[in-house]
Amino acid sequence: MKRPSVRVASTVAGLTLLATALVDASPALAADAVVLSAGHTDAVDVHYENGALKLKVKDDTISPSVVRDPADVTFRVLPAAETTVPDLPSFAFLGAPGSKIWMLPQIQDPALLWPGWNTTALGSGVFTGDKVTISLVGADGPGDVTLFDTTSLGIPNVKFRSNDGLPDRLDVPVHTHAHAGWVFSAGGAYTLTFQADATLADGTKVSTGPVDYRFVVGAAPAGGHDVELAVSGMADEYQPGDTVILQAVQTPQGALTRYQWFSKRPDDAEFSPIEGETGASYSFTATRALNATEYLVKLYDGTTVTATAESVWLWVALPEEGSSTAKSVTATINAADGALVISVDPGDRTVTLPPATLSAAGDRWESNGALKPVTVTDTREAQPGWTAAGQVADGFRTEDGKTFAGSYLGWAPAVVTQGTQQGVVAGPVAVPYVAGLPGTGLGGSATLASAPNGKGLGTAKLDATLTLRVPTDTTAGTYSGTITLTAI
Image (cartoon, rainbow, N blue to C red; front, side, top):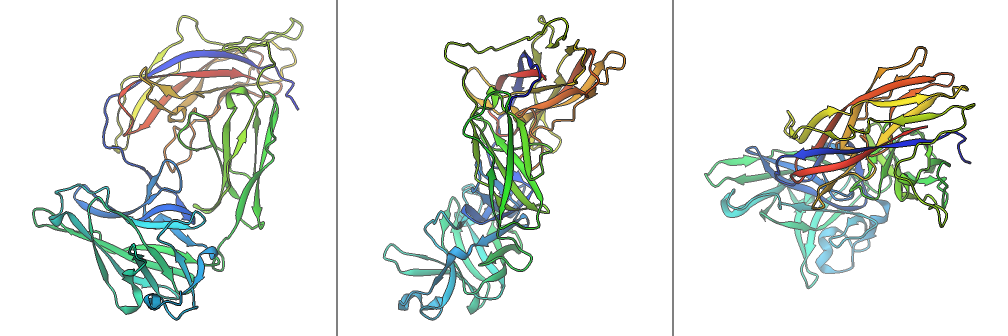
């Protein structure tokens, strides 16, 4: 069903942005707790930063990959990993032939988690012998734990084994990325404790100390969740102005009710959370600007992600053959009904942000500026109310083709002036996107201001403080983008 309101759009010219430096490109650090159950991950990921050796988790189950604190990760060995010990003498170290085990194999199975260890972030010449030692120093759980790989001839080579005395140590050269079979002899919850040690080139010894990793093997324990999540309600195609209503569906239906919806536009590199959309359903208006956008939803237990739905695509119908599309439209209706118009000063359509500077935390480039006034005039006697919104749908781009997403630009809206009894209220702050934190910035439609039903008659001037925050690995250059402003 199409909305009966008049939609008026005016385009503001590009915002010119500058990133002044290029530093080491590394995955973003994520702070949310997650459950990893399928896909590639470097579970034991060794880093050396600011004179300290650290163990992290490199999560490649999402794109782009992120680096996580092991304390924020639960590794799930799904029931599909259940198998039996082969009836071969060379595998006797796993138990009696035919006995039940759960194994994450050395060769990737797309249906299971594929954890490994990684020292590719370590530089040459930093450590004596260009190596570090990774040790399994503890294993607490209902069964035994074994990590092994096999030679090209299929001969197993045990790396770590909990039932013959710990710690077990493994010398690993820098620039190594390796996988092994992870075998658990019983289902249940495990805590595996790893540690990395090394000697610096000057003879100084460094260590991560013991770091705990949580594994859940087989069926989820009491109080746990084995839930599949899907998105329903997406039609094959919509007309501009149609209402889209998406629904998160749990199978089986459980007690958890906290969700987060995400979207990814065609030019976006990753999914961004949709601010404020934390319910089981999500509704919005289909527009041509949203065509080919992907949507998904995640289910949370507290701050832990327990299920993620496969994405669904929004398709919005193209204009009929022979018609034309408009970059900038001002719509008016007859004098008896009045009109709703949004506009900017034609001679002042460009906003140039100052050169970006490194944030106080040193983890992103930042710049701040003003949107400059935007005018909304409503002469409709019925006073149906209105909402003015903006977004940077196509992101930002340099002349030589380097890009970043519009979600990295946010704003704090303000009402500069308004008519008597107009009732205009500034929209909420749209926080620039930061990996692992809520906020979509202007990558999605963000409200600049609104007037409720029965209000809005008159002229209002709106403004916003713009905040740009981009990752430190953003390529230096001058980036331009377009904020599209709409009033509905």
